Image 1 (tube, chains in turn blue, yellow):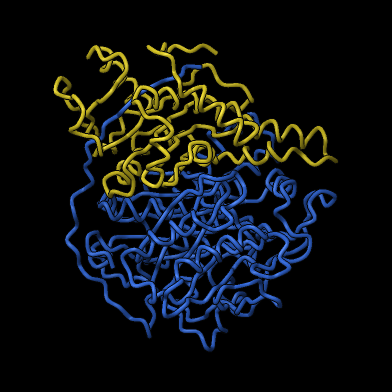
Image 2: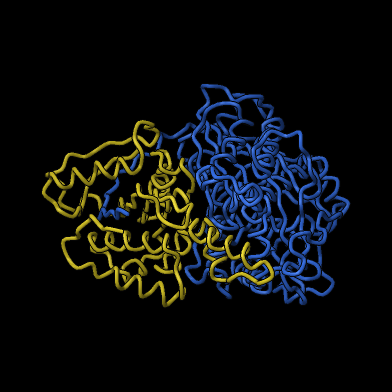
Length: 413
Length: 224
C-alpha cells in the first residue's frame, strides 16, 4: 500500500440492478448465474437489443428513476456501513456519476421545467436525501466512465485529506435516446452479450445504481467499523484518439492500469473485473492492454465480466460492479463463472473459476468509456481468509497548491 | 453572439484548433465549439502551443465544469426521434450528445492523455468543484490542467442570454519561474461557498486588468 497517503477503505456498499433491488437479490442471482437481460420494449423496429431493466418499485423516494435507484443504493451502502445519518462533525462529500441523469423523465413528461439543471440536480438531491445531511456534491458525467471518474476523484480527495468520508454513487436509467442512439452506432448485440467470445457482436444495455461508502482508515478506526475492502491504487487516463473507438492496442487503458498498480506488487492481483462490454473493439483493446501490463508477471490474474448478468449499465457500471463484488465477497458468494463457448485469443488469460474453487481477494476494476476515458481501481477485500488490519495513519494536511493561472480568457454569449 | 473579450493579438490557436476539431471529428456541437474557442485564447495567452501540450500529453489533464453539457445536441436528437420515429437518428448527433463528453472531446482534439473529467449541472459552478483539479495538481497526478467553466444554458438548443465561458490553464509546475513579484497572491479556499467559479474568474480578470497585464501571464493563486 502507498504509505505516503492516507489509506482509503470501503465501509459500505449498495446495489440496484435488473436482478432486483438490494444486495440480496443481486448476490443470490449472480451466484446462481441468472441474468436480468430481457428483450427490448423500446422501439423494437429500431432497437433489436436485450435490455437489463430494473423491476418497477414505486415506494422509493425520488423524482426520477435514476434518482430512485441512487436513493436506494446510497441508503443500502450507508446501512452496510452501519451509519444512519453521518455525524455533523464528519467532513463528507457525495461524488455521483451518470450519463443520462433524469433524462428519462424529461422524455416522458416533456415538462417545461425539465431543464438540464433540474435533470442533474434532481438526481443529486435524491442521493442527498438518502445521506440525510448537507454535504459537498460533485456530479460527474464522463460517458461510461462517469462513476469511475466519481470513484477515482473520491479516492483522490480522501487521500488528500479533504474529506473524512465520501459516498460514491453511479446511477443510470435507460431512456429512448440512449437505446436508439447506441443502436445507431451499432454497439448493441442482436443476440446475446458475449464478452471475449470469438463471436462477440455487441453489448446489452442495462440500468441500475451502485453506491459505496469510502472513508479514510483513521476515520473508520475512530468509529470502530471493520471495512469491507481497501483501495490499493487508482489510475485514470485518456486515449486521445476517437469519440467512440478505443485505441486498438489498448495504450490508453494500459496507462490507467499501470498507474493504478504503481505502488503494489502486481502478482497480488487475483482477478480483473473487466469493462468487458462484448463489442469487438473494446474487448480486444482491453486484453491487449492487460497482456502488456502482466507480460512478465509470474502469475496472470483471472478475467471476469459482469455485464452478461446485469447488462452494460453505462455511467453506473464502475461503482455498481465494484459494489456488487464487495457485497459478494462480504457474503462469501462469488458470481457465477462467466466464460464464452469459444473465447477470442485471450493472450494467456483465463476466466475466473467457479465459486467453489475461487479464493479471489485482490483485483482491478476497469472502465473504458466513450471518448477514450479509462479508469482503473485496485482493491482488496476483507474476508476471513484474507483478513488484514487497517493501520492508523497520521492524516496529512489538506492539499495546498500554488497554482499559476496562465492565460485567462472569457467568451460572453 | 458577441465576443467581449477583445484579445490583444491574433489568436493563432483558434484557427488551428477549429481546423483540428473538424478534421478529427468531422462535426462539433456549438456548445463544444464555444468552449474550444475560449480555451484556445487561453492557450494563446499562456503561450502554449499544441506541440508543447502533446509533448507533455500524459501530464496534461482537462476539467470542464458545465451547466448543461451538449444539451443543444440532445434537443436536436430528441427532435429527430420525435419527428422521424421510423428512421435511425444521426450517429454523429448521438455520439456528441452524451451530455458528458465535453472533456473527452477536447482531449481527442488536443491529444491530452491525462485525466479528463466533466462535472455537469448547476452545482458545477460552485467553487468546491475546483477541489478535484487542485488535488490532481497537489498529488502530482498532472502537471497542468486545462480548466473550462461554462454556464451556458442550452436547454432550448440556443444559448441563453446570461452565459459565460471561461478558460484558464492551471499549472503549478511553472510557479516561481514567471515574473510574479508585482502581484499579491490571492488565497482561495475551495470550500468557500460565497463565491462561484465564474465569480472567481471575474475577480482574476479584473485583478489582471488593474495590474496592467492585459492578458494574464501569471496570477499567483493559492487554492486550498
